[in-house]
Image (cartoon, rainbow, N blue to C red; front, top):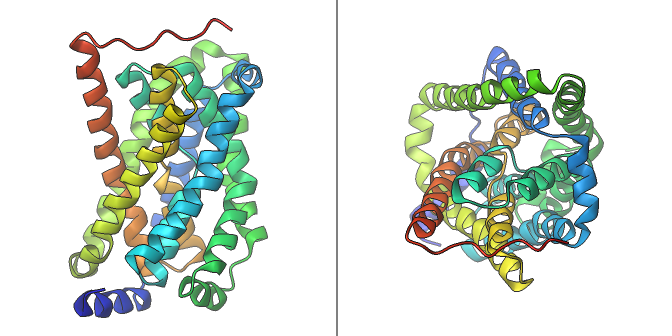
Amino acid sequence: MNPLLTVLATDVDGIRIAFEEGSLTTLKIVIGAILFGVALDTRLEDFAAAVRRPVVITIGVVAQFLLLPALTFALTLLLDVRGSVALGMILVACCPPGNVSNILTHRAGGDVALSVSMTAISNVLAIFLMPLNMAFWGSLHPTGDALLREIDLSAVDMLAEIAFVIGVPFVLGITIARLWPRVAAVGHRVVGPLSFLALGAVIAIGVANNWSIFVDHIGVVLLAVLLHDALALLLGYVIARGTRLPEASTKAMTFEVGIRNAGLGLLLVFTYFDGLGGMALVAAWWGIWDIVAGLAVAQWWRQRAGRGVRAEPEPVA
């Protein structure tokens, strides 16, 4: 690593991003709203549909909760990032997707039904797998482990927080979708966009309040996030093509693996890691760049289809 970057990386391990208690509460509400929006577009039938496509769902689960964290860990070692940046990258990799993956799949002309099913399954599994993944991979990192011991992270406490933030909105949203489907349909169209605009506003305000820190240290995480995001999207695409999924399913798999709910990661950074500098910068920048990169990929697929390259038909069975 460049000596200057080494100094900056060391510094970023020692800084803390200021985030007021009121802002943290707002962030928690916004993340809950995002998951509520996902649930409003989820039906119990989506879980039944997932059961009927066990191979595809299993491929997605393995890619998201096993391969992506493992490859992320390897990337942190390859880039030689410092502890807080490594932990931020690992945390983001452990996050489930949000409904942005569904929107991008639709825009790209992909298998939206598969995308919605995978999002629902992934968010439920993330309640249990996210804290375990974070504790496991974080403890293996040569510099991240020391920070984890200083923070004394409890996987049980994180599980409880994730269960509350994901589980409560998810159950509420699915219940409304089941009992009042028309209300859920309207609510999804409103809650989804508004919650992501609100998340963008919270991130923007947080960056503005810590502008000097952001300017001084963004270079430390810039390349790491760009490469990490590209790796996540590429993993989804490669594993889909490698398992011979149809093109529409490949698009869904690409976004389900590549798009992470970094807002949830940001919430956990301020709840359990005291705004640890590198982690907060990674989660905040990922939340911005992930959408930009995802939109670019979706637009490329959309234009490709417009030029007459059609998706492979989905199998009837």
